[in-house]
Every structure is written in C-alpha cells, then in structure tokens.
Length: 337
Image (cartoon, rainbow, N blue to C red; front, top):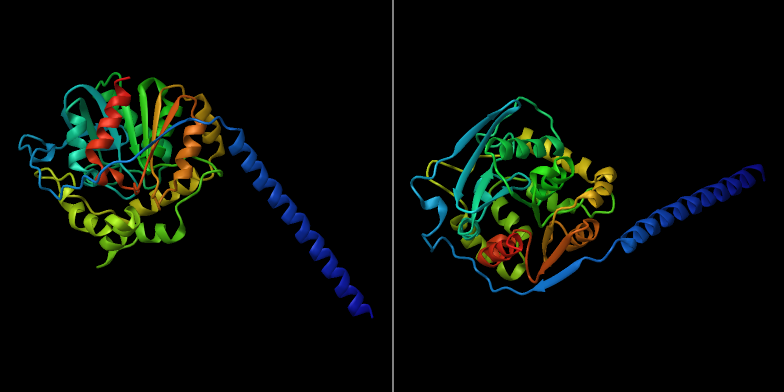
C-alpha cells in the first residue's frame, strides 16, 4: 500500500510538473507568435524570373579582365584580401558561411559593375584575409567590413550580405550605421530566437567534405528542377580571376563560423536593435530556399523599419546563380531610388 501510494503520488507530481512545463512552453510559443504578429507588415513584391544559368558561356565578365588583381589591406587585426572593379556608387558584398569570393556568381557581379563600383572580399581566415585571433564573432567580422570601407574611403555605400554575410551586414548596420547608406539582405536571417536556424541535416551537408560533397551541396542550394543544371553550371559561373583560386576552408574557420552562427541564433538584443536601423533595406528571399527558410526574410522585413521584401518564386538559397542579371537589376533599381 505504501509503495503503491508513493508511486501514485510520484506520478501525480510528475504529471503536474509535465503539465506546468507544457503550459510554460505553450505560453512561450504563444509569446513568440504574438511578437511575430505584432510586427508591422512590410511591403512585399512577389516576382517570377526566367532561369539565367550561363555555364561560363559569356566571356564578358569581370574575372576575365587580365588587369584585375587581388589587393590586400593591412589592418590592426590582420589582413583583408579584396577585389575592386566597376564604376558608380560603391556596393560592398559580404559572402556567406564557409564561402570565399569564388562563390560569387561572375555574371551577377558583372551586372552590378555596370552601374556600381563593386568591392568583394574574403572573410577572416580565408585566402589572404588572415587574423591572429582564433576565435571571433559577428561583431569582429562587421568591424572587418567597416575597416575596409574606411580604408577605401567609400561614400554613399550599399552593403549587400548573402546568407551569413547578411547577418554580418545587419551587425554592421546596428553598430556603425554612419558607414551604410543602404542595406541588401539576400537569403539571410535575423538574430534571436524567433528566427528559424539552418536545419541540422542541411548544416551537416554544408559543413561536410568528400567525393560527393559538391553534389550534396548543390542539392541544398538549389530547388530540385534546376539541380542538375546547377551541377553543370555552378563551377563555370563562379568568380575565378587569374591568380585567384578559391581557397580551402580550414576546420578552424568552420568551427569559428559555426559558433558565431549559434550565438547569432540566441542574440535577442541584436534582434531588438533592428528596430533602430533607419537606412533603406532590400530583403530578398528565394521561396524554395531550404537553407534559410523564407520566413526568416519575412521576419527581417517586419523587424526593419524601412524594409522592402522581394519574394523570388522558385529561388533557392544561391539564387544569384539562377537569376544573376534579374537580381542585379533589382538591386540597382533599389539603389537608384
């Protein structure tokens, strides 16, 4: 009788505790939902583009110019390797997770360079961008971008961040808004717990290696209907100037970037700071993005006071490879407003 009574009491307590935990979880989920619903709805523009993968067939691209050479900026924290080309108002592009400058689509850059001075660079630890610090965060990478903007004496700057680069761009806009006139966030996500992180299976694919690694990455960067075309075209459409080979990404860089992404996903303070970002922002998302779901871009556009959302039908995470000219034209139109 004692044992049974004790067991029954224990079960009642356990159920009560479980019920309380469930109630708290539901309350928190509801609170997140309420926060999401309370945010203002940004102007959204759905667009449908025709596929523009060129498979390296067009020679009129900046990385084919013999005179184009990588330059190196020396800063107090290390070096930054960068390329600079084109004419017009400057646009600084920040690349994504475990990516080098080679991951930019050459035709996308070519189209931007028709109307803008384009500046691209490698994040620290990659290629000629090196630092003495083994560990670093989003703020450090944002400071690297700021150092480049200042050293090149750029004015009226548009900062474009793709994927993780969009997170760095957000931090730069929060910390040093005087350096940024306009912000373009492509296939990215906001900070904090309301955002939806990269699914674990996708993260394993992006962080992997091996003989089938390239095909597996193409399968998460592009929607199913264009995956085979992406496998054929991706390498030919990469930015590969003479003398620059896409550098390998070391385990140390992978670890550092993985940790800073984890911290970004918990940074509710940075999320609240987005409401103080006053420059115009263009948020662009592919509606078939399996790496960072379109809801992240919708949340971004609602969180930023002066944001416009462009929703690209059938666009994947690397949609600049699918629609290099159309996306560049849309960005140039935003800058020209």
